[in-house]
Image (tube, rainbow, N blue to C red; front, side):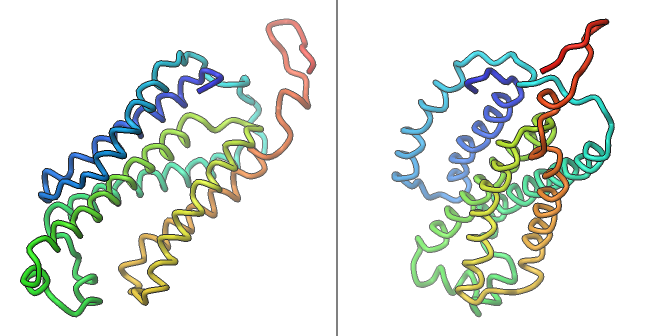
Length: 234
């Protein structure tokens, strides 16, 4: 944002609109969480102020136009993150829809060894509360997925080390928490976790394929390039 990158502002805008918009999923499950609303109210002005920044630059550096081996491998890495972003978007939307409708999937009820009717009989507020958490998680996942997808489509350029670290440090907490909590509580049904396993494999492959391209020497700093009829050296 500080450097005025158009693609980055667009990615942040799309992701933020989806994230804040997901708050209104409560209309589907009937539970208005005042603390959730307070946090959204506090964060929304910060998001809107950040969108006031002018962003009309296509990239920090001109792209590498040489189709060398690193570039070809990076195309596979970019594809991995495009697939990951798309898959997480579908997953997030699906989780949100389930959250405002059925709340549980069959494997959830199998793990709990109960039925929604039995749970609701103990407390009328139980189902809306669980639905709130599930729909909120789906909305957050959808928001993050859009950030990954737009970044993978528009932001990858040679030597952008910060981007590789962003992918790594952004993804690790999600995967560690998502899979770790299932392991801790013993909810390890293979079919339930299969989408998460698939996402981890795609994530790791993407990082491996992009590493030489993003973390290697910057194109403009280590080789000469031509502008018109003049050679420019950095």
